[in-house]
Image (cartoon, rainbow, N blue to C red; front, side):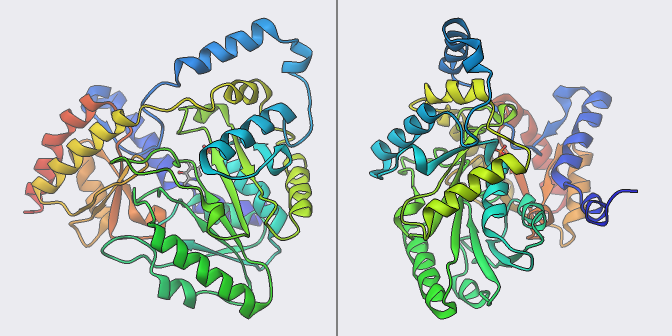
Length: 395
Ligand code: PLP
């Protein structure tokens, strides 16, 4: 029989994936064009042409023994140096290759960070609502997540609740801005306040507490906002980045971790992350795509594409009477469930072929998430369905 741990994991299996599967079943039944699937954060724009060109060039020009061979567990040194140079140039940092570890996406990155810093029984504070997989990643190392409440109006973190949630067992805090599922970008003031509280708590508990910044949506910001980089706020910050959304490469499984020199005992942390990449079975990030992204670090996804969806959907939904948090980043919209029972609301939405994900999947019930990383045409065609659903609830 399966282990007790996996049995528990199977019981709480991903709601998002379940909705995605259901959406596919509905598409078979009603025709794909008649189902509006807003369940999954799969990018809607293709990877930039430069990625394809780089892959072709690498395959044509480089020695296959190099392109497909084993390497250092942290990745190709040149690739890591290219990432460091790119960050230094954009964010005025001072990294070199030894600060960068190439990873199997953000998920792989978070798991090697957690394996390195967490002991059984440790607590990881997470700002709700949050990407539910964090619970599994912490549980992988017998640690547990502790949710910090948001401000119910703005969905910025509630800083009093944050300060109140620290205990002797707090080892790390995960932060994700731009945020999945709310689309909120944490303000400079919020980030400074979070850093101040962390500094205070490190002193009070006489231990290192890490800020783990999960940044797959770093470049996906709207209205001319500047991209942010969190290591400047707090010294013990470890960054996990992914190219899944920024270059539309989620299936390729590629990202990186940054451990700045300012992190306490940085060399040991880096060595731990390197070993974790090997012992968790990733061994190293996929080789060909490592080489390709290193040549595409200045490339950008089509933010305007998502912005058009964002604007149309937000205006239409608020017009129909829904209460929505206006997204400032990522490609998600956080909408208040007009039904006190959000499960019932998600079921009602399905009647109109709308596939939404309930807030409970992000540990914050009472809302639903709309992943608007779909075609503009899907947005347009889905609007009458949202309107009828609003009428049903007399919004
Ligand atoms: N973190 C957040 C907040 C995400 O939304 C996702 C994916 O949707 C991940 C991590 C995992 O990203 P990756 O596909 O790069 O592993």
